Every structure is written in C-alpha cells, then in structure tokens.
Length: 329
Image 1 (cartoon, rainbow, N blue to C red):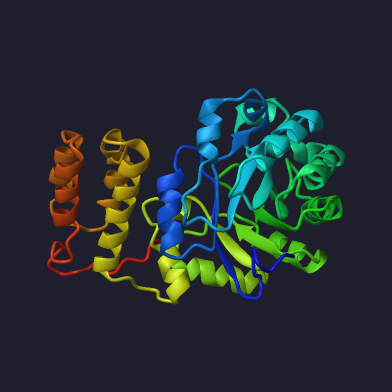
Image 2 (image 1 turned 90 degrees about the vertical axis):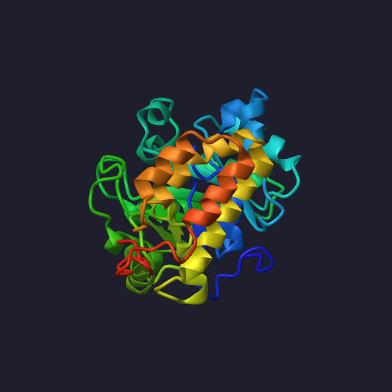
C-alpha cells in the first residue's frame, strides 16, 4: 500500500459513489469537513471510450479531493483497458475502482456491476486488467457479498489475487438490493480472510452506527453513501469524534455545499440545490414547509443564499430544541 496516498493505520472515512448525488460539489464538501477519500459517480467504461463529454465532466474533481478515486463499470476487458488508458491521461486521479456491486437492472443486463459476481473469473480478469494498464497509484474494487447466494470470502479473495490494493464491501447480495438486512458478519469474515484493507459499506446512517460497524467487523474504514445524503456532517462527526454537532457547523456545511454548486453549475446550481434543501430542512427547523415553498420559487443565487443563511441560523430551532443536535438513525 502506498502510504502517501492512503494510510490505513487508522480507520478511513469514505464517501460512496451515488449516481446523481455525489457530484463534485457534494464531494468537495464532505472532503473539506472530514472524509478521507471521495469517489466519483459510477462511470461507464464504454462511455469513456466513446468520448462521452458527460462522462468526462463526471471525472472532474475539486482541488480538495486528494486522494481521489474514479469508479468505472465494465464487462469487457478490452473496453475497460481503453477506459483506463483514457483515465491515465487525466491528472489528479489516484485510484481506479471497479464497480462489482451495482444492482440496477440496466447495469446488470449489460454484464457490469453486480453481474460480475456471477462470473468471478471474468471479474478477476477485469481487475487484473485495470491493475496492469493503470498508471495510477492504486486499484480497488467495490463488491457485494454475492449475486443471489452469499460467497463473501471467495469473492474477496478473487479481488485480492487479481491485484486489488483494497476493497469496499457492501454487506448485501445483489438479490438483497438496498432493503435486505446488511450482513456485517460477512464483512468481518472477509476482513479475517484477506490481507488487503477492507472498507465496510451498507446502512451506515449515523455516527454511532459507523463506530459500531468498525468495532464489530474490524474493517479498515467505513464507506457511507445514502447515510450522507442530507447528512454530510456525519464525516465531521467521525473526524472529530463527536456524536453531536453544533447547528452553526451544520449551517456552515450547507452554505459551503450551496457555494460549491454555484461554482460548478453556474446560476442553475441554485435550482439544482432545491432537492438538497428539501432534505436539509427536515431536521426540526421551525417554518420548514414555508421555507421549501419559498426556495421552490427562487432561482437567483444571491436571494437563495440569503434564505439559506437565515433559515439555518442556530436560533431558528424548535423551542424545546428537541432536534438541536441531531444524530440520524
């Protein structure tokens, strides 16, 4: 492991890739406030090879993102090699990660994502292809513990033998999608069976849950996806070891997220930010419904920023302060 890129001597806090959510503005915020590693949204190897401008834009990173991982999906070794060679020509990428876990039917039907769990020989060859042709420091894979049946240790060992420097493990099968119970015991068995670092993933939605998962599985870090949406301060909590977070810090993070959206998307970032504000405003703020109605009619960045700064002011809490310091469950 190249210690100048990732140091696994203490637990790592990683933002999981989520399509349509973990764009550059969101990643830059969690990086600034506590994440050790950020990962791009999943990018099709085929799209990269065909010079998709949308996909190339998704590769872009914030200057704060160091280290930075780009996740690719693919089922054809030649196409994956071509995608890797394109990424080799882009500065600022430290890790190329292979998605071996996405359960979405569109991805699975193309033989990518969790479909690779049905053909471990192919999965191993593709990881080995990335390892062989990548000029980036590290290669990794994000896996599930099986397609229909659980095969956690077998899958993890294939990744290790193919050359992955570390793996992230979502503790469900593909059949379990996002609703079945996460099998943290399977993650623990993987950690005991392989010598490469293992990052635990799946239903980590609070500071307390993250600490428990680390202790129970013995994993080298946690990867948080949906648990960070509307709750990016979970990385601040983990970084600073605090179960509670001051409302003023929460306000600072929300404003930083908004500012990054405007920088990346221009004025239209204000419109795109509405969906985030709908989620952020569910934390026990007085007048939340009226606030959401106002921001739905606001597209001017300056006006929206003033609304955000006022609404999320620490004083604007419910009288009993029942939710003044939130820990999502």
